[in-house]
Figure 1: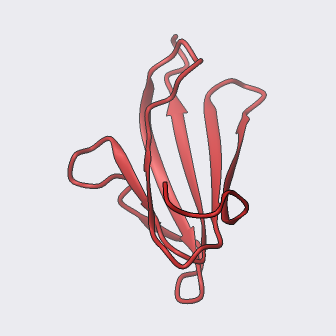
Figure 2 (figure 1 turned 90 degrees about the vertical axis):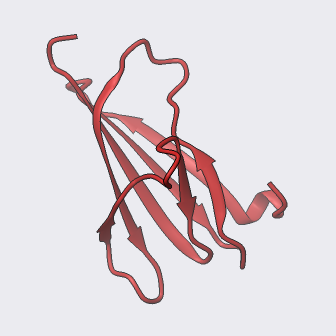
Length: 91
């Protein structure tokens, strides 16, 4: 990643029911950033994921969560992007 560390950061929260993981990416740089969507450190597989972007031109727009390779996501410049992972309740 070729952006200053203070320009890109993320936070994550697991729901109390353990059925959703919410990751919020903040990209304050002028460059789009590609991130990997694999989840490490949680012994569960997600059943679906959704992506929402807020920027100067978007207001919490729901968008396809992945790039064509299905494993990476583009975080647009000057945006806040939220990815919500849904887990099966039968795990």
